[in-house]
Amino acid sequence: MNRRALLATALAAAAAPAGAQDVARPMALTAQDRADLARIEAYLNGLRTLKARFLQIAPDGATSAGHAWIERPGRMRFEYDPPSPFLLVAGGGNGMFFDKSLNQVTYFPLSQTPLGILLSENIRLGGDVTVTAITRMPGQIQVTLVRTKSPGDGSITLVFADTPLLLRQWVVLDAQQRETRVSLFNMALGGRFDRKLFETADPRLMQ
Image (cartoon, rainbow, N blue to C red; front, side, top):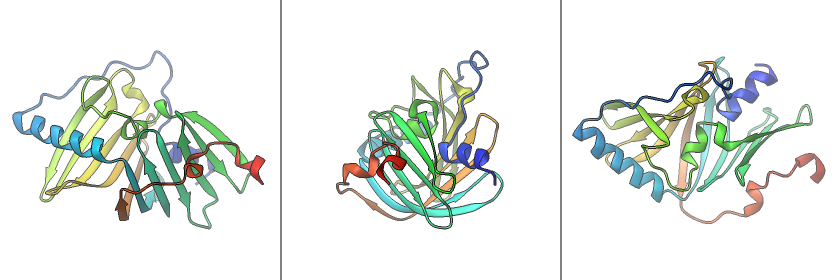
């Protein structure tokens, strides 16, 4: 996979052209849907810190793995295992993607990625976020979300184990309809992380 495709994968979305997007239309919700969304909102808003191993499947089928740290609101770090030369960090409303092999850094606004929905300070599955699908399977529930005013930015589907709820995976569909799947393993919830993990300063200046 070339760097351009990998970058789009790591950012989890590419913004659609300005003026090319419509306001998202919410799905018709049943009483069961509303009850499940209320449970999911409560779970996500109670999820402050998370550390896990991750497995990522890129749009071309390439796989990579590494360690992930998430601290809501607004902070995340994805360290890819060698030989993948990538680092993805978000903090202060911005994200930074570092390709060590090319010694190149790319910055992006977190608000333009579907993953930014998960990192919001107060997650509300309505209003600025539109629920476009709810899928239930034995022991699992999936919710697909878009930004209401910019659905062309892409969608994120959150996959939970159910009873009890536990975030297991997310699937991002970007503006070009490319799918990236990230699964979480060996997850540890809670705890405090060193703020240096989420610094988005240019890593090249630290070398």
